[in-house]
Image (cartoon, rainbow, N blue to C red; front, side):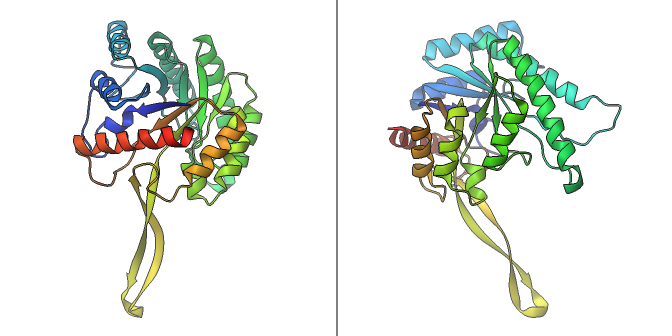
Length: 294
């Protein structure tokens, strides 16, 4: 397994310290990560801002640092509601194609996509089929550029393990692989060993993070009491939260997975967003990945 650091961790999106892509790649190398995953939107690898000269410079930085650019991460929602006359799905397929071209030029092997958020129970079948059709077409577009399309279990459509396996079977494209992560199944109470063992043969990458659950309650003055609310999650270094990472990695290994293991800080993290804290959390999480991967 190849430890990988995701640039979203240093994008400043949640008020944390921000680095340019070149500085991020150098930072990943300094921390000891052999590979990186690049966020495919501003302020990082945007299709609007990246020309051939910028790609060449970025690839040179990675080669000089001895870091592999493994994955480019697209941000998609193929079930996003839109006016009928607006070709929003086509736009997103075009976006994925543009990122696939950038990935090829950077020497990356994978473009990551999401499925879609649910628009309502009555639209479940329609949302599912829209995402299947779009991702099948994205798989073909990515193949034209020599990169694999990876589907991450992040959005509502096919988020459960069995649903994800069914979804990939419906897509039925040789260039479509799973990027099955432990976070969503852990949040939903699934057996992480079983899920990882089941999905490992279909996977090209996983992205790991860890969280603690912080209970929440709403005060009811008329009852002089509290009503429970959904818990809040707070990101922590790998191995310090409730996600059963040893079970997940055991399932991956037994299933034969030997791909990329990315670490991400994609929400506020314990200790705050200072540069020093981000570096410390990333370094401790790298050590945990190496321990778990054996």
